Length: 201
Image (cartoon, rainbow, N blue to C red; front, side):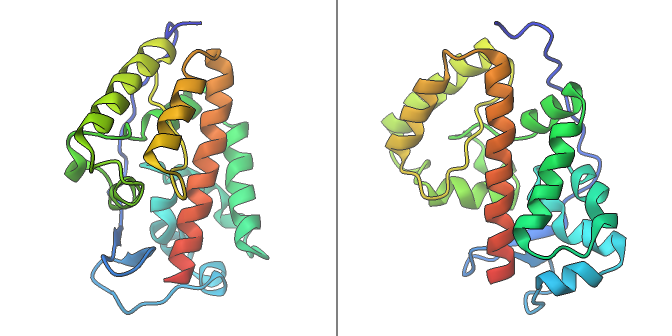
C-alpha cells in the first residue's frame, strides 16, 4: 500500500522544556542542572509540572503525557510507559500518524534542528560519523517515506549503524498498516529508554 491517505502534518503545540546534559545520558530541567527527578517525585508533582517534565518523552507530543497524568501514582516506570502506550494505541489513526511524523529521519542533515533527545540518540548510535553510510541511510529513508508516507522510526539505543540499516531494509517492503503498528511500538521503546535515562541522571 502506498502513501495515499496519509496526512503527515503536525503542529508543535508546546516548546519542549527539557534539554540534554552532555555529561549525562538523560534529561535535566533546562536551567536547573542539579534538580534530580524520581518516579515518586513525578507521581506527586502538580499535573502541569508533570506534563512539562515529561514532555520530551514523546517527540513534540505532550498530549500523551497530559492524558495519563490523572492515572498517577504509577508503581513503576514500566507502568507509566504502558499507560502512555495504551493511550497512543487507543488514539485515532490521524493522531498516530502525526505522532510518527513528529519523529525526525535518522541521519537528518540538519541535526541541530532536532530535539536534544533525538540529537543525543542519533549521535549515540553513530549515525553522524561515516559519510557513505549516512548517505545510504538517507536514500533508504527517502524510499521508505515514499512507500509509507511517514518517516522510518526505530529505537536506536544499543543498535549499530549497520543493524539500523539492515532493519530499515527489512521493513521497507512491508505493508503500510504493519509499519504504522511497528512504528508505534518503536516509539514506546524510545519513550521507555528516555524515561529510564531521565530517572538515572
